[in-house]
Amino acid sequence: MSDLFPAKLRTLGRCFCIITGASRGFGWALAHKVSHLVQPGSVLLLVARSEALLRTLKEELRSFASERELHVHCVAADLSTRDGVNATVAAAKRERALADDVDHVLLVNNAASLGDISGFVSFTDLEQVTSYLSFNVSSALALTAGLLQVFPHAPGRRRTVVNVSSVFALQPLQSWVLYCTAKAARGMMFRVLAQEEPTVKVLSYSPGPMETEMQEEIRRLTGISHRLLPCHEPADKLMKLLLDYDFRSGAHLDFFDV
Ligand SMILES: NC(=O)c1ccc[n+]([C@@H]2O[C@H](COP(=O)([O-])OP(=O)(O)OC[C@H]3O[C@@H](n4cnc5c(N)ncnc54)[C@H](OP(=O)(O)O)[C@@H]3O)[C@@H](O)[C@H]2O)c1
Image (tube, rainbow, N blue to C red; front, side, top):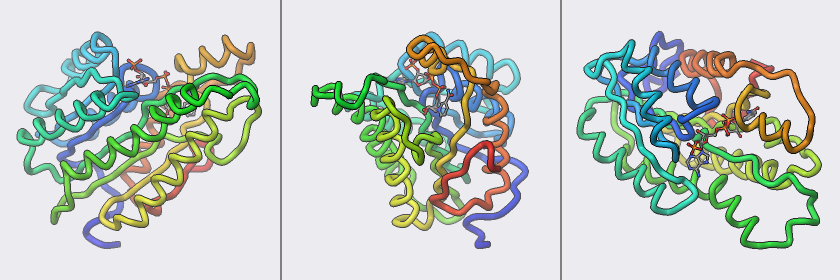
């Protein structure tokens, strides 16, 4: 194992962490976990559209981590738009000045949407399909690329990119053509990143079915209820993977297999 990717870490280090979709659900749980595992002087960038929910989360994190220990910055941005992606990259650039000596840059691409789960042949509207893929695929690419430019390779600094994935990146499910296609495309996108950038460690992580608003939407649309995990369980396993740091860059790992 090289110094660049040291194994078995006790903390995430002095970390600059960006979490998209942090206003609720899995992203919210991840923000809590990360904030307990970083070293003083770390920065956490919380990204979603709902500014009020991000501010509430920031207040919660403030109750156990002081400003000196963890600087939390909320970015209210719609990642389905160019402006939203650019605003997030610009915020990271500004906040970088506060944390020049971070030793770990961690980006968690978590924000996503379920989309329409009508049958395949109903998707005749190119704009509807393009708009879904634009948010769920293109924006993750543009955002990751922009942030890797803000934080280029530097000696002594790890860079980790997590793609929050799903079993449906690998397995087709009838009526879920948009969701399955986007998760599969994201999986390949991040495998290419892993090949191209040996100084970036990349993980696609499938958290399993969780109690979130996305699952409420699924229940409402299909009438099907699954046994759901509380978000903190898959979040804990992801943190363990990031601390052990011995996953192969580009791997797709599932909550139920690790
Ligand atoms: N829930 C599950 O069972 C499950 C299973 C496997 C994988 N996943 C994956 O886990 C991740 C999180 O899912 P979740 O269940 O926590 O979803 P969720 O409850 O629907 O939360 C989605 C998050 O993404 C944000 N978001 C949505 N649209 C956005 C936009 N246009 N711009 C910026 N942020 C946006 C939402 O915040 P705002 O509305 O405030 O923008 C929210 O914070 C997703 O990638 C999902 O595919 C979920």
